Structures are given as structure tokens and as C-alpha cells.
Length: 432
RNA sequence: GGGGGGUUUCCCGAGCGGUCAAAGGGGUCAGACUGUAAAUCUGAUGGCUAUGCCUUCACAGGUUCGAAUCCUGUACCCCCCA
Image (cartoon, rainbow, N blue to C red; front, side):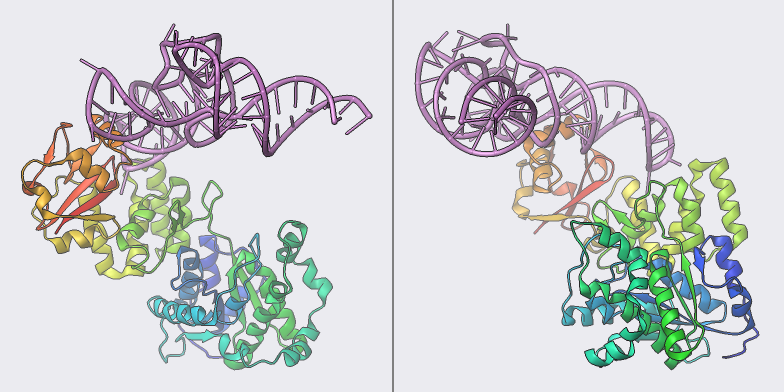
């Protein structure tokens, strides 16, 4: 246990932020303030990128690190093969070993952006439980680990109980065993790194306490646990999901612009929580934003600050500035005098369609056909309606007539034209 | 086994043999307002080579100048009596 004089009151910080859902010990604050501790959180590698749902865990680890503790980010290469039944309504599809390996590699890369994994006393550790679990024989596991798990206790866990109550899906033996793996992870990390605290979302409580019980039985050591509340929206749905899917941390899956926009559009009712949970703003600033939001919600200072902070953290200054530039263009005036490259960057998420350059000659390409080609209208009738109702735009300038023809002079850059239907539905036409 | 009811455009649901691409609501899309919000208001909502033409009212046939509407058969659903 290292002594550091730079310890900050992490529990106090988490408390005012509302990040403490349950803790195993009321004295956790004193314990953490007494010495630098090692703390771990687990992440399931179900995809090749982390998403907003993982942000909570990463931020909590980051807060611990900044408060003078050592974080371990555990990537569940082994547990990911099984699937955690907690908080899931049905049996999960199993991923292949290759998929998992690839996922773990790219996830680790993303984590490096948020935590320091240097050699300092508080330098984080990246662990993959596949490294130790894959070498465990089934018989050994049953004798050493399984022996310590009373089934009646396991059955009483909420995660298991809720699944057993459902007659339609049930719970496989495989998923039932998940808890044992995660419990052993904690014991292993305690042995190897002196890790004494596991943190996780509130749905992880059962798994966390399972690890604590196991450590007590196997090693007679006292470990601790802490959970944070799940990040949900005021309407009860999950934060970080849109109609088109999850918001990812990788710029390939969710562009910095789309990422930034997601936070800009957060509901007033959710903004305070997001600021507390997902940014490192000081209490004073968060509270002054609360006040601003109450007094003048139209200014949306909270959302702007939130989007700024989170985008900068994930995509860096460069990502933030390109997101801002794209925002200006998307909601700004006429588009023109740009290069293909600039347009490609700004409209990274926007679907595009290639057409022959010869179509621009003469007056042959009508706005109606162009909208259909670009996928902004599902039929010509639909396109015609959009134009007639004033909802069609070329390079952000409204199309006034149904007879509008497109020509080379309408190109916004060398080869690209920007079409828009409605307020923010864009599509590009590339003329090759 | 007997009797009755149903199946309509994305969804719910109204449809008198011609005036039905089919009321109304929801949803969706566009516009106004606005905070890139919510609420509200307005318009649109099968397709097209477009004052007309084509496809659509479970499916297949039939009656009729003319059918979503009538008749026959088929499939599926619901209710009642055995």
C-alpha cells in the first residue's frame, strides 16, 4: 500500500456528483483517504469499440486515478465469452475467440486515451482476464472456485432471480456461471496487484459482492465494492442510444460531429446529471450551470459545455474543433467555395451517391430526380411534395421552384453538391 | 361438429354498387413558431412519362356498363353452442 500525500477525497467527489449507488462499507471514504489504493472496473468487449455506456466506468476510474489511486481496467476477454446475465433480458449470443481478441485490442487502445498507464505509482494497469482464465482447467476451477459458491446464495441474486422468473427465455448454465468468473477476477487482481476495491454500475452489485465473498473464503482478506447508478434519461430509456443505434467512442463508428451533436441535444432534465457523471467540471461550475439552466434554458449553456467537455475528452481538441466547424455549416448559411476534402470531413456521416458528371450538362437533372437519387425522397411524388412545401435545399439554399434544374454552377466544391431535405437531413451528390 | 362475426392503404379504424386512391385518428414527412427542445399551429401522406394513366381494400373466380362494397370458393383470426 503506497502512501501518497496528494490524495484527494474521492468519495466526497463521487458523492456530490451522485455517483454512489451502493457501497459495501460506510467507512470507505476514510479508508480511501488513508492511502493510495488499487481499484478495478470491468468492461465487456462485445464490440470493437466502447460506447457511451462504458463512459461511466472509464470516468470513475479516471477520477480515482486523479485522486491518487491506481486504476485497473479489466477487459473481459474471458467473461465476454460467457455473457453477463445482469441487466439482460435474454441469453446472449456468444462471440468467437477471434472476434473477442480483435475487440480487446481496439478497446485497449481507446482506454489509453482516458487513463494513464505509465509506470508511476498511480499508473493504471490494463488486464485481460482471458490471460488467466484460459489456463484454468474445468476440474480445477470447480474444486477451487466452485466449491466456495453456495447455489442458494447465487439463486438469491437479483440478476439470476429476474431471469429465472421469465418463462420465455430462462438462463443457461453458462450464464449462470458468469458470476464465478467475475468473482475470481477480483481475487486474482487482489493477489497479483493488491487490488482491494471493485467499482461498477448498479447492475454489477451482485457480481461485486460475489467477488468479495469469494476472497473472504479463499484468502480471508477483506475487499470492498462500490457501484454507481445507471445513467438513464428522464424518460427512463438508456442514455447513449439513438434510433440509429449506440453512440460509440470510436470516430469511425460515430463521427466527432455526431458525438458532439448527441450531447448538444441532451434534454434539459438530463443535463445536470450528465455534467456531474461525465465531465470533470468542478462543483461550483456545475452548480452555476444548473442555475443558468433554470433561469435561461434557451441559452443551453449546460448542453454546450457538456458537449464540449465530453467531445474534447474522447476526440481531443482536433475532434472538438472539427465537430464545431461541422455544426456551424450544418446550421449555418449557404455552402460554397469549399474543397472536396473539407466537405468530406464535415459531412462524414452523410450518405452520398455518385452520378455521372455528364448529367450536369444542359438542363437535364431536375431537383426532383436529384432528391430521389440522393435518397432524400422515396419517390418522385415525395420529392415533389418536399420541394413544393419549401423543404428542399441545395447547398443550404432553399429551392424555390419545382422546375429547378441542377448544373455545374451548383457544385459546392470541385465535384460535390450538398442536398438537404427538411431541417437537418443531408445527402451528398458526387459527380465523377 | 353447428351458428355468428371479421380480414381496408405504415398502424387503428369508417366505408351507402357509381361522386373511392378510399372519412377520422395515430404515426411519418415538410412548413411556421422555438432553444438544433417540448408543446402548438398549417400542409402533405400509393406510383407515374401527371388536368390523365396505372396499382391498391386477405386470395381466386363470378354477377354488373361499373365492385372495397353483391355472389361462390380458399386461407387465416375471433365469438357463441356442442
